[in-house]
Length: 96
Image 1 (spheres, helix red, strand yellow):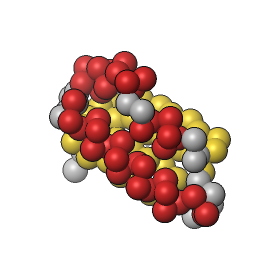
Image 2: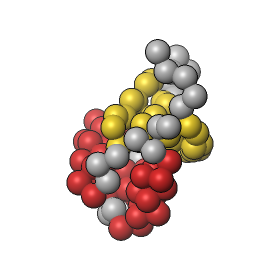
Image 3: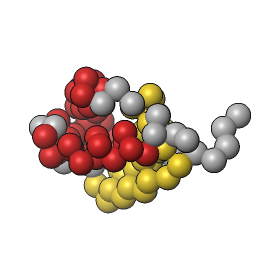
């Protein structure tokens, strides 16, 4: 069963372009070592915050990538541009 990690945060408008560039670099770096990352979806909500959902082939692959996160220098460089960040892990139970 596939797994997801969902983040919610805000990004100041002045930092959005830089954030998107850093996020793109982070995703590419993670996929190099952890090809189980199948897709990412960034959504701006009507209140101005973002949800960022990362889909993985399995919970094991997601866990391995999360454990390796300290080795990705792009991670803190990207997340420093966010505020009020939260994250939740889950598994897909139905997808249509």
